[in-house]
Amino acid sequence: MKHRFVNFVIVIFAVILFNTPHALALGKLPEPNDQPRHETAVTLSQAGQEYYVGNNSYKELTKLSGAADISDSYQAMQNNPLFSQLHSLMADTHLHYTTYSGYASNSLAYFWNRTDTVSGGDSYVMFYSDVLGNANGATLNREHVWPKSRASFQTKNGGSDLHHLRPALSTVNSAKSDHTFGVIGGVYTSGYKEVDVGGEVCYRVHTADDLFECKDDVKGDVARILLYVYCRWEQPNLYSNVAADLLPAQEKDSTDNGKKVIESLDTLLSWCASDPVDTWEMRRNDLTEEVQGNRNVFIDYPELAWRLFDRKAPADMPTPSSGSRARFLGDADTDGEVTALDVTAIQRQMVDMTVSSYDARLSDVDGNGETEIIDATYIARFLAETEIPYPVGEPLRTE
Image (tube, helix red, strand yellow):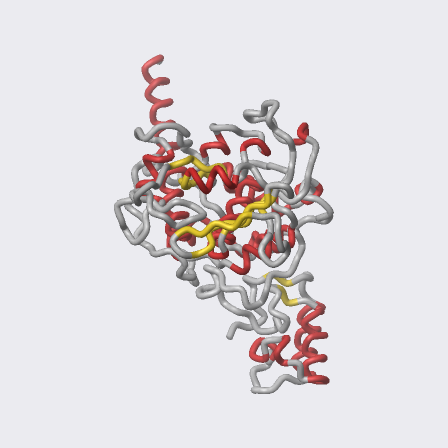
């Protein structure tokens, strides 16, 4: 009887193991990142498409509401259905944990040799500067993009998360220190230091005002990493100072100060939009998933950052889903939902012909080649029979 029980337990364990997503691939050394930097990604990878299923499908995620109160980043976490769902998704699928120090198997640097290479090269690229790790004088630091002095983690958990930790030049990392990310160029006329690397501005730092500004084509990477840490590791001081005791106790110690990591929500979203996801970032997301099991959802669907804070994403922002996600007739203001606002948008479009504000193709619901009152009527009738707002994923009529 004892042997039968043991065998039964082994069988059950095997069934669970082989039916756990990514179970056999976790922690393995992936292929080198074969993508170049700074080429905009307009399609979601196959791995990304397979990650979002069931209640975590894009259709279901976009049904969830965001923050009711964005007055500060701690309040924005509270009673936020989308935040809760994204946290659960990224936490529940995070099944393998990397180690912080050294270069041996399972260390951050061990995996960086694959996740952070460029165009399949033999050296990883340094964050902030785009300098290769084998360049002359390139000295490695393990960079907490979210400073560990402002977090509940040190060098474990969020402090050794491959999505978060990046290789960086020691000189740049030293200058960045634990300063708040923010805009310096064009705001200040003096009092800051500007440093070039490779013939272009790499960073600006204003020590007196506790600000660090990275170069423009890294700002989106920074924003999406901070959003990931905010949701995955539930760090409340994203764009607001909070009391240190609000930080969840993971590796909490006396260095936690609760200071915000970016100067404002507007800056965060502006950086996310101005520097779109590139193909390298998408590929790195795939490779990190092979190691850890989870993905950074804000790389796959950056538009969810706006929904998280109950804001409207820029209609013209290129995203990895924009090349493959269907567009839906009736969504005249292109905010991702068919609502009563679209009726108003069509009416205004007919009165003052501000077609630049709306998408004329999406406004032409009946497909007769004109935007007219009947299109607004169709939407109004449709909404009367349907739950409002009407989420992307269930089209009124596809193009």
